Amino acid sequence: MKYRNAFIFIILLLLLAILPCSVFAESYSALRQEYQKLMQSSQLQRQRNNWDKLIAGFDRFVVQQPQNKDIDRALFLKARLWDGLSRASGSSKDAQEAIDQYKVMAERFPDSRLADDALFLAAQIAENKLKNKSSAYRLYQQLIVQMPKGDMVAEAQKRIAKLPAPKVQQPVVAEVGHADYRMVGDAPRLVKIRYWSGPEYTRVVLDLSAPVVAKPNYLKGENPRLYFDLLYTKVVNGLPATIAIGNGLVRQVRASQFDEQRTRVVLDLNRVAEYKLVTLENPHRLVIDIKGQPAGVALSTQPPGRQDAPIAADDSIASILNSSSDRQVAVHIPREEHDEGIRLVVVDAGHGGRDPGAIGPNNTYEKDVTLAMAKVLAKRLRQQLGVKVLLTRSDDRYLKLRERTEYANQVGADLFISLHANATANGKASGIETYFLNLSKNNQAAEVAARENGTSLQEVGNLEAILFDLMANAKINESSRLAAEVQQSLVSGLRSHYSRVKDHGVKQGPFHVLLGATMPSVLIEAGFISNSRDEKRLASANYQKHVASAIVAGVESYSSTIGQVAKR
Picture 1 (cartoon, helix red, strand yellow):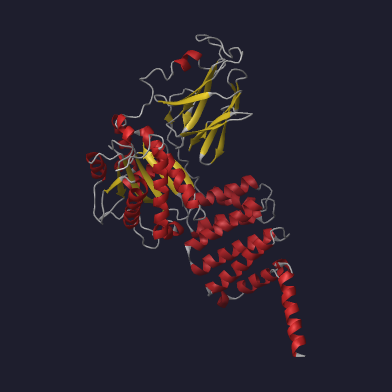
Picture 2: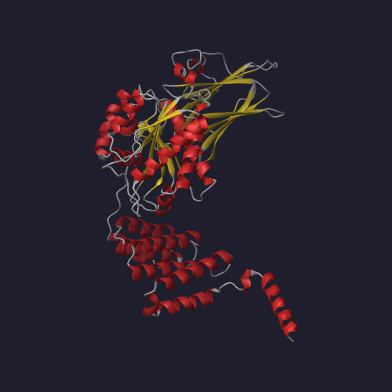
């Protein structure tokens, strides 16, 4: 009898193991009953654990049964739980989570009869609990526009009539040297593609709004092609995706946004040939010269001087030829000191002393994080690249911003790297971004600059007025290349160890700490200390090591564009 019971027990265990999880998954009706039970008991509502357990139950239901017919109602009740929890706890974070959950439900199931209720309730929380009238206005407006037949539209219209319309902030608009294009935002833009082609020689010119890093790749074989990845570069609206050349060495040129980190320009070749890439300034261009043996193919354009050549409509072949790399005054040629490579790097730990920088929700000080990262980075640069490294500060002391670059200039540094942690009023913002010195291109860049400079937005505007006098000495091109290499390395390096690493890209800003540097210089925001997840990472020794290793890899990649890193 004892053995038979044991056998039955083993059989039951085996059956449990092979039965699908959905058999034991929580049903919507059971979860709804638990929800009603919680809503009817003020005593149960006093314990946060009761809310958390039921929210976790809805989470499991959503994950395990994504095709269930009640999934929209489950998401709605999950949001209602966060809504109720926020009222019980009085927490603004819980209230914001309720808004986010309502929005998720409405976005996933816009045709559900509960979608308009979700947006209305989210707007109510924003208006009454968080006192965020502009957010409430936008949520009511979203409901009215996206769900015009919803039964909550009339109520939303009544509420929106009593709220002030949020002010629309106009972005800073900067001319980029092309009459038909204005750049808004931070990323450099691929503005135009021009070409001239003959049987032995083809020139392709990429017109850019700002300096970029171009990484060439050559695929030889039956269908040879040459492609260039332009790091942190966007394609201007209206640029043709394909430009046919049809004869000569190049069959066609293709350009598209490859991923969040690069634009890819592909030259499909008729046959294998040699190429040369030249960087030009004022305005910024990349000139690609392709040379090969003639193959009995006629010219694809009229001789220079004719105005009907197949380049951009408002340009002539002569304008391209005037951009020739033979005109040495316009060609960007690295200065002679680059022949010796990178020998000395100055690492700047942001803030310090009486200037704590930003402070995280768990009381982590930016000045402490940056100093720890600076020490690790200095050690890694010395060990992995064999370069000399000096710190602007090695302890908790206050330094004026201009003293930091003055020090780098005095010691003859080849690179200047300033380490920081970002912060915003929105605790949900997270991720990595790298800046180099230039005119700020939007309000966000100006706000970051104002915070790091310890000045007002108005003072940032005044700073921009004098930047033109200093730009000649600032190595903008080299700094942008360094920033792109470091940013790409940071994102790829950290994503291999951490989840949800957001890539905010390379940006330009008027930072006092970079002003006056006579060497390539960048400012790295290694995470948002205002975000609890990023704050925990920034304070972690492991994260600091991963950040340092990624920066070293970016510096090493940058150094390959100017020659090998010099050994001490």
